[in-house]
Image (tube, rainbow, N blue to C red; front, side):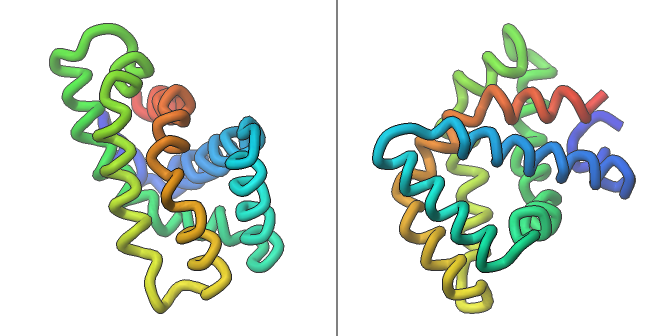
Length: 147
């Protein structure tokens, strides 16, 4: 096993990756500052209150698509990227962020809980910046689970 998509096929490892992903999201939200940080924290808190366990369930559902989006960047780094995976992800943060957000954008539709969709859409304009800021933690998650 080498890429995140392959690792997810093992249910025990998948659970660990999802739990780790939730921890990454929690830490990223906790680190937000200023007015936009307050908005992110408020939206995140509202989602967790409206639908307890939603973040975990949503991440578990989205993880296969996220892994497929991340795998090409990991492969690119592995076959010729310089520096650490974190450095590589930081250099390509815009591309990676757009790849990941395309997945969540596609999923937030009429089937989504309206309050969750409203919170997501309200924060989406800041999504690229927040996702780019998460690259060090995302790279760490990948390195912990891809051997």
